[in-house]
Image (cartoon, rainbow, N blue to C red; front, side, top):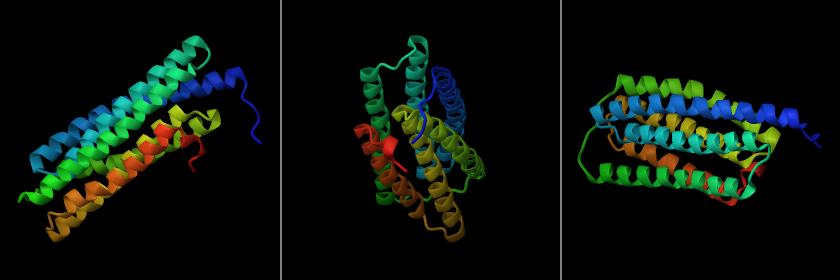
Length: 210
């Protein structure tokens, strides 16, 4: 059984969670701008979806950061407001899933062939390197505090990592085979993960998630 944290340890961990959320906002704003620009230039649905995910992750991190700041000021969490914030974070998962599904279906129905994007590939490779480190750091803090908000933020970052991997694989296979349908299908993969994580965040089950 884990020993209870002292007030000093709790404050230090909360501040660390806040710094991680603030870094997430900065990184994902830049990542989102680059990804959407690359996706629009090359006509890549999954790349645009990835950029939108970066924006959604930024919104999630802003919500989490706001509650952590309030918690540090008040010295204790407001459980009711934090439950409301957790539900808002859960809605960002559903928003992402809906966007990717709509855009992916539109791409499959249409007759549009995307182009290769060196910039997009670079953004994805950077994400594959940064996101697992960031998600792991958030999860350590969230687990130590048994904090569903920070764990939800970690799950959002993990979704970004999964989207990075699936999008990178889809683009690599597209460039090798020329099969345009691989691009939207790569986006569909992440929709399933987003719905799953969104449900757990909504129900407050992320504390027990392994």
